[in-house]
Length: 427
Image (cartoon, rainbow, N blue to C red; front, side, top):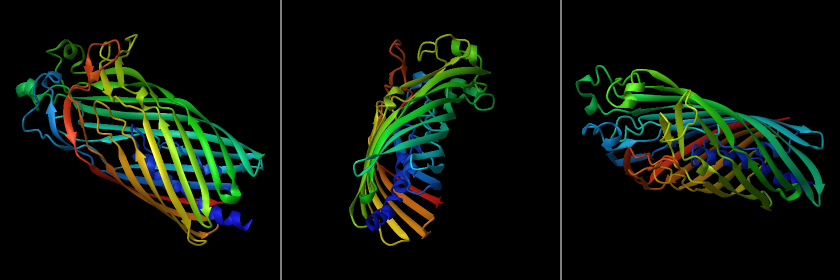
């Protein structure tokens, strides 16, 4: 029993250091999904954390496509922009043991998000500002069985998810508006959208508490969101092209749909010496199912990007892979720490700034009593360089139109930093 207690002190902080990593991952991932609280050895646990992320992505050498906004953008608009904004991601959870049979946890998280605000630049026809936020409410349980030296668990659960957001972009160039800009018309349009959906998870785990060994494999389903919103073109004249005649000067109700991706994650941890723990994980996320998200006027029977759509969100993602490895150490009964290294494969393809990211993470846990933990974690990462093509891509398999071809630009290697704090109470 003494050996078990020694290793358990090192086990408890692993979930906290891992919490910083998803907040820097590809696609629209923010907090992601995390059920490590389910394995806490205490019978009843309350846990909360907040993560602040400061990416420093800067784009340069921007080249506008004048065919997408009725004319070239003003030459005075900058060819560089600070593309990213700082953001917060929070998580709150509670776990309860169900006798000796298993455990259940309930948690709130913010798995998805986007915070882009390049402002007025040579890429304004593609994006001036984009925000996406999410709320996820989940219940997850496991049933345990004795198997050999340890416990085998079957894991299952479900979650309800909400997403919402908006995007501003320069629909019509100021040069095309002439003297009407900016006193009468700015040429800027806005998309608002929101939706919700349900998902589920299933997995297995095996633990040997004596040596702090645990391995788990968990699948999280895709979440189908039916989106509703509006396209606001009141800052555009109802004149010129057929689209402006039909939609300019008014707000149009629109609808769309998107499937937030499914994922599969393998985690392993084990004691390697008294008070020392090694841990690692590999996660696949199906971001490639999100290419172009079309929005159509309410009443249009079939919404197809580049064919019947009024506007689109052009993402062109590929699947994401995240690999993490690290070592933790229990210094004494009050202090524990850990370090980790993470590689996240970039999800951007023909357009976008999401290239490969490398991160070093650290974690310190202070436990003034056996029932209370204060946690602080940090990460410093490198966002690798790349470019976004002005050629864009095909809007949809059945369309000859191209999407995402409003601007081309390049970007160098940039830094990203994050800090996370949390409190855990055990009963």
